[in-house]
Image (cartoon, rainbow, N blue to C red; front, side, top):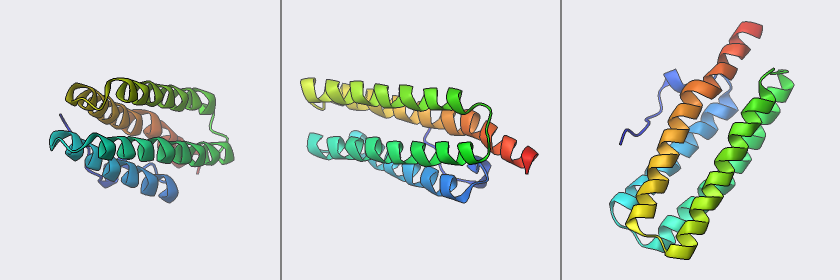
Length: 135
């Protein structure tokens, strides 16, 4: 599975958002390593809990920046964020119900990496382009 490494090509041009993306990537690496190294379920759950809380924090900050810039696709972007949180909650519930099995851990890991890569590289980049074009 391809893991994102931060580089300037992922920058949306807002330091706050870029710094938060860097933190999300670091925590995703922690989660990915925990799953691959068969860490205890409690550690994996704590990492997922952190990702959930930090994602909510990040999404709120990102949406505020979009509001300040009068970003026309804000509502669509909020929808992506809402769907992400719903998926994480579902996966977390599955883990609580079935335990942090390797299969669930790998599923969460794959989903998160794919979502994060697509979201930053496609959806967030649209916002960055908008900022550059509108000054």
